[in-house]
Image (cartoon, rainbow, N blue to C red):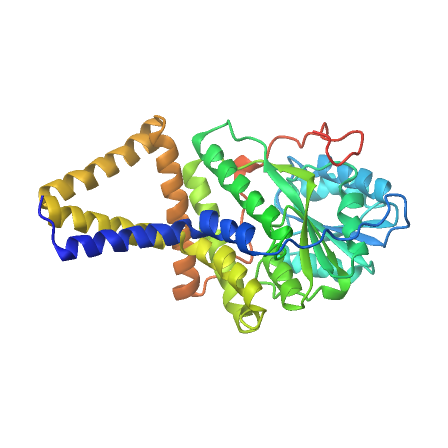
Length: 403
């Protein structure tokens, strides 16, 4: 073994880069727990108190497998809530989605697009057609309890709360290595959101299910993803985002590794586009929120670059210390493990290959946003995250904790 100052420097640099890769998921939440004062719980409205008016908005494309069960559930959610209306935009589907929605046209506000315009365009249109005090956004493939809207609305009794998000659980984690990795990642995300909710406030939400004050709604440009844009706008306005952790909603994760890579590529590109547009206003936030935003919402998308650079530094250090042959052998062993995992689905190599492809998708999406300015105004949803039907067994009693 040949030890040189350059070898030591490369090793230390690799460790620093790996630490940066783990910041979002390890050091950031730990710093919030150790150094941030716990925020008071928001004041909740009494369960039986009169509720603000609510518009439930759903944008759908080719959702024939799930749309009937989804609308039936939304009708139950609206009945449980009280002063609620349901608004559905069909983005020029090519399957039977519109035909399946038409029998509900007397109970929902149904808008059918003549040409594909995208989810954000549809959500903006639905909000414009409604007049409620609160707006609930949800996706077609998301399962929920009947009482979800009731529980999500209660924290709005606190005037500092601008947005409330549900707790998303991936329901098919045992289906494949890819779905297992996706479910694990999302459990980490929800754990971070829980810590944020009790300290600095949640930094951005996903589109599975969240509720927003209409007064804080600013229509996103149609080429930007609505959930991240709207929730970051809440922070810019100085309001808080609260995670209603007991309100659980369920969704399938992608099953195939290549499919998940493409999904991550799209999501990363969309997120980077939003960050670039809003950065001039986000950078003026209070320092603690800015630290949380950079840690959670920016560094997360840089993780594959930190990991890649760290791996290159380690390989260079091995080459200097043990020779080029040893470094080549390490690289070959790593590539073989990925190939075995992807082609033969042998555990634990299959989990490693799925995670690597997912990270590659993230990196490709970020680069796509930065260098090509691509937007995903319209896209086809991943097929494996659409079950044949949405189960209506979650929460027949309407309670937020029913499973």
